[in-house]
Length: 303
Length: 303
Image (cartoon, rainbow over all chains, first blue to last red):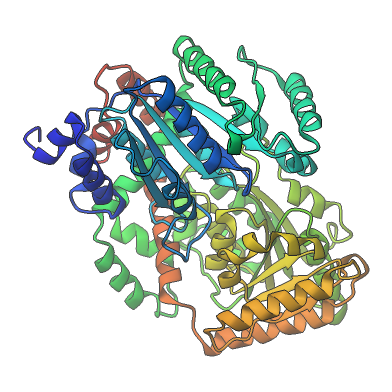
């Protein structure tokens, strides 16, 4: 397996090979399993998840973080994966399209890829995990994963990212009920973006007091104010991200997150092994029987 | 397999056996596969999905529909499955708790069950599909599935329900961008609830004009105004639901929805066959190796 030239180039940092490997996995090519099994994953490459409600300015914030890193670390190499779980019917990815329009798209040190996952077979997040591992098998210093925080997606980003940044705007204060359910537990860091608007201080205060009630960890979740469009607060934000990455190194990731990830990958692996077009044809024939039981059908096929 | 007394009672309409079967599947009991494979599923029992943003009044609307059906059809038997995909960390189900508090909870003709699915292993929706099939294997006349419309969940309800009702409130008009992405395609019927508030007519008009632009089906999606808390508009809503159920009978469900459902169920079936605690232990041991590749680990385990 080591003789695969595509993987050799990927591991050496070649961007075209990287893009090709990602496409093979994204499209469930028959080569996907072999590529994934032969990846030399660098488990130390930091993965930073950025999530939050639509309109919070996540893309602008990621773009500002890229500018900051490119200015302060001349040799830095950064990957951005923009995951769009919201639309099952449009194949384009809004987030990625927005990022493409930024100043960084033609920078050789920056690799931007978008991924539309909603409605994906084989588990929503499995491909996101797989593509992140491909990114970790090449020479990036930082990997950012941006996704709209709706439903399941924040949970997934938390199981994937070393540091999860949850971005709100002052207006998000009104949705405090939504904020409280689940998202408090997954955020390693909160950002109140567009902090020049009314309500920023109040939201920051509310978040800090809710965090204080819930604190059960050694990590004190910071709440950082930014104005991403004018790059304010970005140095402070990145310093907090680095603090959390450092904290992780001394407090290893929980084993149950790895387990949840393994289960999702196992599902995807098993589905890849089935010939889906044959499965679909047999299903179409069987399903018109009057006493069709789909569970019996599945157990016959996966004996 | 036909000798299973639990299943015999389930098929005969016994509610305790129904609750027991659901719990066995929900908890991934070793009996789950056998139960599912032996279900005599009545594919004609109508499944009505009700989804929409938090605060749209979905529970109140379902409660009003139950009142209407109980009044107009004295012998009717109705199941309600309240699926909560929003919280991975609380095991209770908010939606179900709210429904429990309604007037119908002690009515023998009504069966209410809640299900917290977020963060579930083996696919978010697989258990929802399985439990719906258990409900279809007994004597209900209608099955309602209520879920908060966030991210993936509306898509899932659409692949599960014969008729998908999407509920908004007048204030939802401000989120028209969100409304347009995906949800227009899955709704068989829109409800503007709390229609005594400002903006109800405007939202109805906007929905109708967006629907008009997109219409590609023989079914004209209605937009019904209700005030669920005072049971206004409920007869009209149910009439539209029945029209859509009738439409379905003459326009069979798309084959690709069945395929997506089969894939999710197959994932769940395969994961159930693995001994998860052994898998977890082996994973914990393997993952500390310096060159650990999770894809190699999985392919070794699922050979």
